[in-house]
Image 1 (cartoon, rainbow, N blue to C red):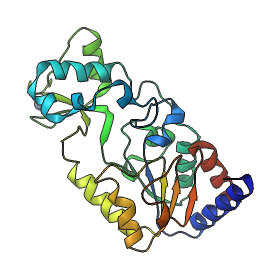
Image 2 (image 1 turned 90 degrees about the vertical axis):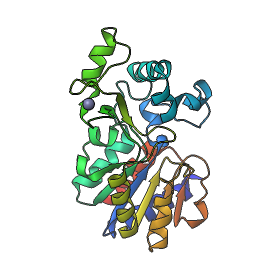
Image 3 (image 1 turned 90 degrees about the horizontal axis):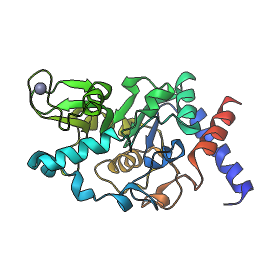
Length: 257
Ligand code: ZN
């Protein structure tokens, strides 16, 4: 895309945002790569180094060795570490402060939208959040920091402090159901949106990728900002293939006027 085209498209998106009544963002791994978090499927993504088969709920429940491996993976902070929100997260949080944001639906588990200043109740995490652990028996949730202290002290498979049950990182593993209430509300917000903006998702992971489809079916204008193609490119009113940070910053600057 040449610069003139990019400028025009940024202007169009700013116009859509300015006249929107229910603005919904949908974000995927591509929004967080600029924060240093590797994506899954891209070149150099996590699945070029790790085997997705090691991250199924059946394996996690079925073998101690697998639980040990997965806790080690979380402990190493490969997915979140000390990552900070980047310009794209900050731009979306700015739209919230301007009173323009209905919500963010995210496939990410990195907590960066909240860290950027979007309130918890406006972030729908379809795949959970790495900063928590959940007990599979009593459903208690714990901040990961508490669990990390125990892992760092040499405990290799932490148990629930409340009931002694099995703790799991509070993220959706392969083969595991998405959190029902979150999914239901994300579905409702997608259908109610009049402007639906995808940032950094290839829209191939389901059921998450149904959200933009629901939005379009219900009459929303669709915007896609993603490096690379998505199966919904033809449905988009505006399509930008560029990095999320600088693009979102330019858009919000334009909305501000
Ligand atoms: Zn428990």
